Length: 181
Image 1 (cartoon, rainbow, N blue to C red):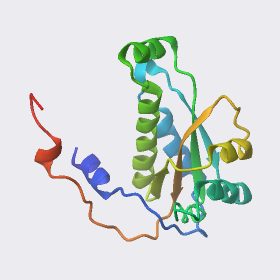
Image 2 (cartoon, rainbow, N blue to C red):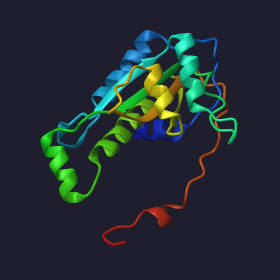
Image 3 (spheres, helix red, strand yellow):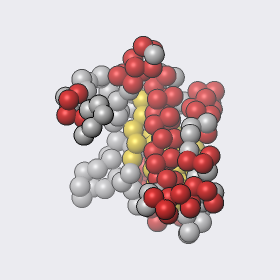
Image 4 (spheres, one colour):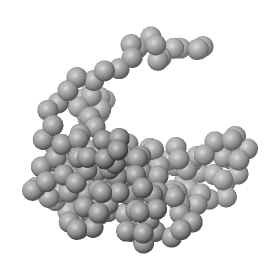
């Protein structure tokens, strides 16, 4: 358990990468396997992972994630890999359960898969950052994603050049209680 806690404490959202250093295919395959094996409600596995590592296409995808107006995501071209996560239909059981409980289990499941990607990347000595801000229509066109599909997240991966920074988190008693709120 100490090893996982150390991994969780070490992982951070990196926003600076060595653009000249590609991610080895073996590392990428292990990261994707961790995502593929992540849990999902009723084993629905409501995801499709698009790995974008071809330089020209990757740069176009990176352009779709950034905005000059707000100064967001200007660092994404540095990352050699983008893993774009597309929402797929859930199975009948997960869909019915989500309807009854008024919860979008697919979004929860994709969040879990994204966390698996980031932790697996950290375990491989790589940095990562989960992006939710992007031009979905532009990305859909670039990656030939059918019009009825939603792109939920883009996880960038690469060799981080960003210094480790201390985590700023709420105090334990603010976020954890036992047996009652």
